[in-house]
Length: 116
Image 1 (cartoon, rainbow, N blue to C red):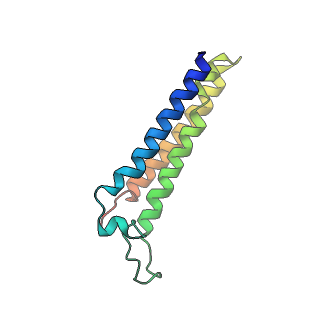
Image 2: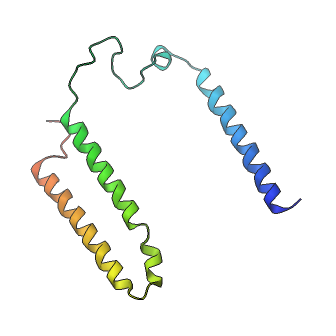
Image 3: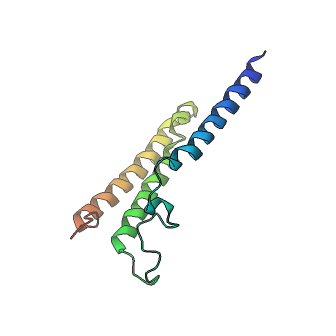
């Protein structure tokens, strides 16, 4: 049996096992909150027009911003093979400096305080 066939068999068996466990495990201890269609903490029978917290959106946007930063910095290990790796390093440093300045500004302005 060659290596490719062995890898395919192992991944298939492992994925079937994990799928079976993921369907079987939640059925062990069902409660009213898990059986409700909304597990997000909102009352499904209440008003749908309740305002959301603006701080929640600020934290979510900051999370997305720093998540995007990781995607922008992923090619850095391959930049060592370029003719001028210092150019890539300077651009990455400027991106990080801009993000750190933005984080410091949010911190000073009190935008990261979750509770008043």
